[in-house]
Image (cartoon, rainbow, N blue to C red; front, side, top):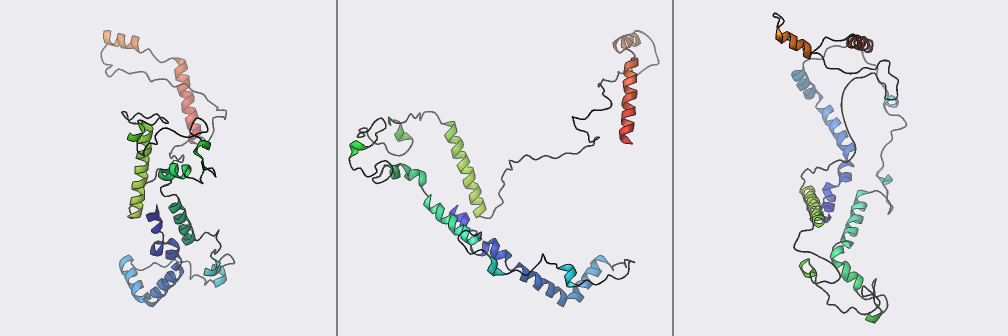
Amino acid sequence: MLLVAQRLEGPFNIESVMEPIDVKISEAIMNMQDNSVQVSYRIFQGCGQPKPSGMGGRSTRGVSDVFNARFRPYSPEERPTTAAGTSLDRLVIDIKEKLKLFKKLWSNLPEDICQPHRVTAGNATDDDQCWNGHTKGRYFPEVMKDGLTNQVNNPEVGVDITRPDTFIRQQIMALRVMTNKLKNAYNGNDIYFQDSSDEGSGSGSGSGCTEACVTEFDFASTEAPVVGADRSGSGPVEDSAAATHPAPSAALLASLALSVLALHRLWR
């Protein structure tokens, strides 16, 4: 993270890049005006001669028509100079100082807590006045070294090194993924962050009525009857088909007619 913060300093600072953009735009306009003949010739050569609009000449506009009271010259002195300002240089310096303080926080945490004049010892110099994990008194068991393997004989924690801890493996993988993203950001590569916001897209048509609306027609969907491919002959096949697929009833025909009428009204 310190290396990524360094990428926001110097020529990579977005404020340093955007601050002279008004001068760059002015220089580009002046350069185009100086070479207006060549620019117009190339445009007409590539795109053809412009057609007259037929609306007559455009009326000239004054400066007051283009720039109103909302637009005013920018003054660099208006940038925040207080400690609570939003200058990117100041924010980068602040975050770098905080990152240096948190460097090796977790690895040094046990020593920082147990050192004299820190959290647990306080002003007491007698070990009998310290908390040993069970009561106030001296800690007699051997202090284990750092590392997972050394915690097998640690009476204070229960660690099974024969089986991998799924939760710890997930945390290690998450740290590795984030480290790779920071390295890619430092090297200038594109980084993909998954957006967790609820987004969706789709298309369709409808009447604009919600579920609370009272619809005019309610229909029950039914499958269309299967029609035989050959009607030329007659015999047991037609009889069995007729027995399997009976003729449509009057209620079905009425529902189909109502559905056609409703669709016709919606399309209008």
